Length: 498
Image 1 (cartoon, rainbow, N blue to C red):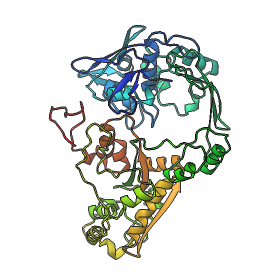
Image 2 (image 1 turned 60 degrees about the horizontal axis):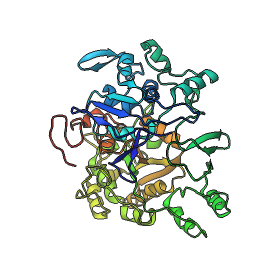
Image 3 (image 1 turned 90 degrees about the vertical axis):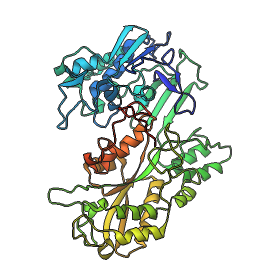
Image 4 (image 1 turned 90 degrees about the horizontal axis):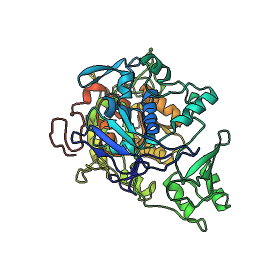
């Protein structure tokens, strides 16, 4: 599948048209985005791409709006909401458009219009400077409306039919419990250079064939076989034996083994935007009995930590100064990484390289530790006098994150024999569930952008409504900054700098 527009090479700010005939034209107020659709593009089943397919793609994404999905990326600029549901999970009956309450189904339908088969118009409710980035994202790859509905009928799936539909009908398609109930779970009909031949879910093998009717440059390969192999040693063996032409290194620690393989070529030194983060939970959740095995006794007795443990800034600074970032970059990333000072990392439009972050400094860590209290109670005891025990989790199999956890564990525990940090790897799905439930006292995980813009990093980690802030348990009290509008200005027109 393909998007309307895509990033130009390795740029994070320049775009090229793909399924669009040209880059979008934008009205002076930033609310109307018009795209002309490339002519002569066909889906893999031979049907023509039209603006109706594109509108259906985005309408379907917003209508379904699965928990944890990417619909919020469109809901915000097009409807001014981050979810189609309220806090209790009920579908919103209406949204505010131009100061008026408009039924959700009607408002969602009117977010796009198709004047003709080759023209699509987006109607935004507020100017969003990064809307091009959203259109270039993975969630914006275009599907065929006819194919989707035909496949739904064939498989007897409950699939979104497109607008217009009533509010009660919209309820039937919103937030499906199981993605396998969707028509496109195991079927695909895109416009790209390769088409799906078979997906063996049991063996985790995907077979693709060249699309000889592709509108763009024809690919060199006739067939592609993609296989999921969890163990790096197995992947490397297949590469050495000629059973694989391309493998994923998995982590930088594995790169030297590939380099010693005769004939192997390593594509390296590519810039990236993934950030690995050591997260503190400011308000750790427990069960109804006040228990959480990850924080032991949940008290300041050396056998656990209280729920408000990380609210003491001196504890956080102790950990920040105890993390040897340079050692991590040298030994784990093999000098192929940087330690960002803020969420506004290099490669983003407003990155400021002059901001300095924390550095490894045991004396400063010791000074902060001397001021640290266990909990926020007025009579809280000095942390050094009581000690602590808690568990930090990371996704199992990720050697880099395991090492990051152990680096802090070793340095912090060296200050006091009553300091105990357990580093524990768990399945990725499990750690995500525990993050959402607020049970984890701390965790090591990464952030990859939903769209490439400063707001997707700064809002997530510093704005209270966003996932990153929720993961830290910081709640609504931290959102003191103005909402983000057009990049470079706050909604009031005040220039901001990062």
